[in-house]
Amino acid sequence: MVIYFYKADAPYGCFSNFSPHPICLEGCEWPTVEHYYQAHKLLGTPDEPLMSIIRKAVTPEEAAAIGRNRARTIRADWSIAKRQVMWDGVLTKFLTHSNIQAMLLATGDDVLVENSPRDSYWGCGRDGTGHNALGELLMRVRQHIRHHPEAMLS
Ligand SMILES: Nc1c(N[C@@H]2O[C@H](COP(=O)(O)O)[C@@H](O)[C@H]2O)[nH]c(=O)[nH]c1=O
Image 1 (tube, helix red, strand yellow):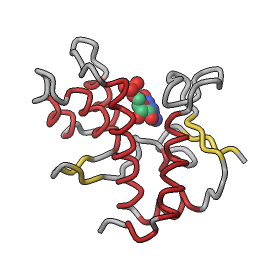
Image 2: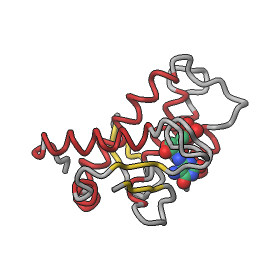
Image 3: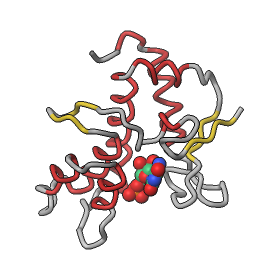
Image 4: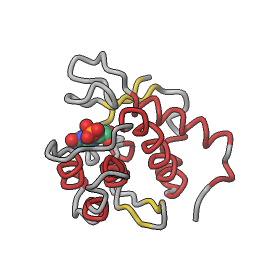
């Protein structure tokens, strides 16, 4: 079976990076994975002080709007670094919240697809042929947790 997800308030919304599941990383609490991901576009750049503004954004939509602002120069290695940032954020999320970890494990070997109409890298894009990197990453997180069930964070 293929499971499609996208909006946090729709079915399987806990797989969205916009879902309200805080994570603790680098000594800070991030309200969502999206806050963490968007802020890390600015790590090591002159706009690095904005990372804490993004972290404190009231909604993930607001965090994404700041992180996507083309007026800023994001880090030069972002196209490579974003994969590790996303792995760290998403893995931490599913090691922190046991209820959604159970939902992820309950998907068995189903294929997970971020059904994003605008993103053909993290999602499958408007025509469904995108990379679906977030779905693939979630399936790797699922596999990782199956092999490391002791890794739950408190
Ligand atoms: N779920 C979801 C989105 N998808 C998320 O957007 C992020 C990619 O952002 P960027 O690299 O800046 O294009 C990534 O976390 C992806 O999962 N975007 C949205 O505007 N609304 C949403 O509900």
